[in-house]
Image (cartoon, rainbow, N blue to C red; front, side, top):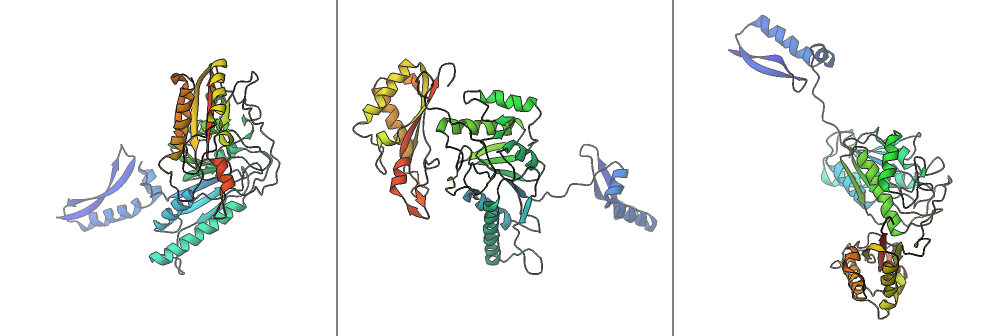
Length: 412
C-alpha cells in the first residue's frame, strides 16, 4: 500500500484541503493525483471545484488617524503607541509585518512606514541588539513623521477621517481632540446639554457611520484643545469622550478605548482655519453651578490631601447651591501633579476627592447627592508641569485640584 494525495472539500468551512490516504499502488493513478495536487495549488482551480483557498495569515498592522488642526496641540506619538509599535516590530518575521499607516486627510496621501528591522540583504534582522537599534530608529522616524502632519482643509472633521481609516487594515489609534466642526457632528450646533445618544442616532440615520466592524479603536487626546480653540471644562471633555466612544461602538468596533496619555504641550503647526466651538458656561442662566474647579481655594500641598483652613468658605456655597438649584448629584474628581515617575502616590488624587466629599457632607450636603468620588491621578493636567524634563512648581499647583461636576434634575 502507498499514500496518495486527494483534494477534499469541506462544506462547512467552504475550503479545500489536501489529504493523504492509502491506496493500491498504481503509477497511472499516482501521476493523475500528482497533477491534481499541482492544480489544487492554483486559486482558479479551487474556485472551479467550488472551494476557496485557505486564507493566508493576515499581517499585523496599525493605522494612525490624526486630525492635526490648529485647534489642537501639535501631534505627538504617545509613549503607549510607540511601545506597542516597537513590540509589534520585534515580532516581525517578514517584510510588511509591522506596517504603520498615517491618515491625516480625507482625500490626500497616506503615509506608510514598515518598522520591520532588515539586514542589508533585505532579510529580516534577527540579531536582537541590531534589531532593537533599527526598531528604535524607525519608531523615532515615525514620531517625526507624525509630528509634521497637519490638516489640509478647514475645520475639524474626525468622522470623515474615521471613514477613510476604516478602509485600511489594522488597529486604529485616533489622535484627535474630537472637537468636531463639520456636520453631522458639528459641536458649534450641538448643544452641550443634548443627549449624546440622540446625536449618535442622528449620525446613524443619515448613513454617516464608518464601518468599524471587528476593529480595535483607541482614542488619544479627546477633549484636549489648543491654539485657536479655548479649553473645555471637565464635564465637556467627558461628553466629547462619550460621543466618540458611542459612535465607535455603534459603528461595530470590537473595542473602543480612551487612552488618557499626558497631553502634548507643543503649539499647533497647522494653518488651516478651524471655527471656534463655544465653551459651555460653568453656571446655568439661573446661576446654578454646572462644574467647578477648586484649584485656587483649596491649595493642596504636595503629597497631601489635607484641606486648607479656609476650605469651608469655598465649600459651604456649594452645599447651598445644591439645595437651591435642585442638584441631583455631584461627581467629585481629584487630581495630582505629574511627578515624572508614574506613581499615583497611594491614590493621592482619590484621597483629595474623598476629603472634599466628606467635608461637603459635614457641611450639610445630603449623602444621596454625592455621586462618584474618584481620582484621575496626573492624567488630566490643567497645564503640563514637567517641561523639557524640568518640574515646574507653579504649574504643579494648578494641577493639585479637585473638580466638581453637577447633575441637575431634568438635565445638566
